[in-house]
Image (cartoon, rainbow, N blue to C red):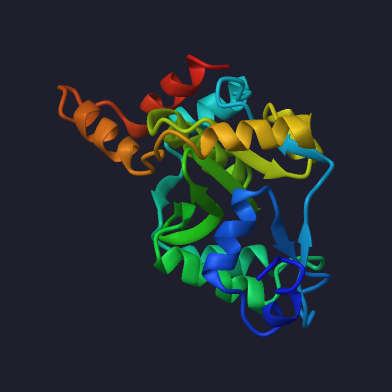
Length: 234
């Protein structure tokens, strides 16, 4: 089934195999609104990516990360993260997309990064992992810098895990301030092809690094490790 031919089917359910096939060729789903009955497939002519060696770590963000102001986790509240991302006044995440990504998460193909304060979820992001590529979908923040911290931890995780591509879909001022750049569709497809060949990135490699850092005396705070990883690239 082609992506175009699958559009009507996607109105009721987004098949996980279809979703993965779409991402493998540089296409992703969107809806016109939260209540939209249909989804459509998007392939931007210009794509926003964050080069993993070009993440822009400002002095203030570095300070926030080092201070461990947020407890940062992964895959602890995926469904809640995507729900929070869909609660904006204007959103492209409808019920079909939310359900499809929750099922992708259950299969191990979609992941979330969460930021917590006082046991409350205050920021996070989610996306799709395929090969050595991570396709960032959306993020939310209820506290200053929470989404930036989540993204910084994601970049560090991708670096440690051997990833080569962080796709951000469309450029925004927020992403540009963190080092995102725009590339042509052709250059994106080339980078995507390279990221999907030669093995898969390891999304859980960061936990082992943090555990080994914590084995030292005195234990290195997680935020210091993350800031050091990003400081080597920014």
